[in-house]
Image 1 (spheres, rainbow, N blue to C red):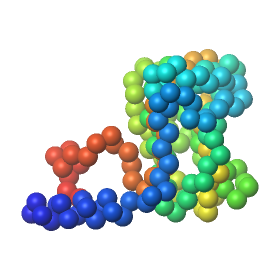
Image 2 (image 1 turned 180 degrees about the horizontal axis):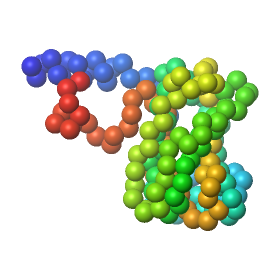
Image 3 (image 1 turned 180 degrees about the vertical axis):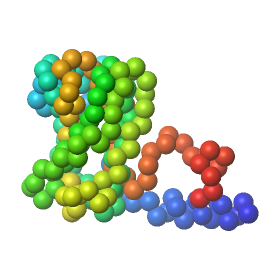
Image 4 (image 1 turned 120 degrees about the horizontal axis):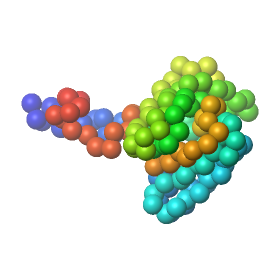
Length: 167
């Protein structure tokens, strides 16, 4: 049984796409920038902090080349003192699409992983060149990004057979 689990895990790891893109904000904003109604800073603690300056703060990714077929999952690991939905805007083929209410923030400063499955969302095809996170109902507060990734599998931080089950 353990040989079967090991073989299945090895097969899973070998089939993961090499195109996954990860931003961990180790010492800077990793190319992410403030859009409208926001400022963005990198306090040096492994986060990029968006501060709302007016209604609808936006944070923009750097120019991307995300293969939408092999990287259909967007994971945003963040903490906030803002409550409300987050819209995900993405650009593919020169057209910008919006996925409203992709996930919801809670104003409790707890770090949470928010998973957004983009496979099947209209417009998620070809290559994504930019992602924007928009908090349409917020005009004050902060959102600390700890990690943003585009991948084929959800980010959990670690894998455990006891917690996650058999592969």
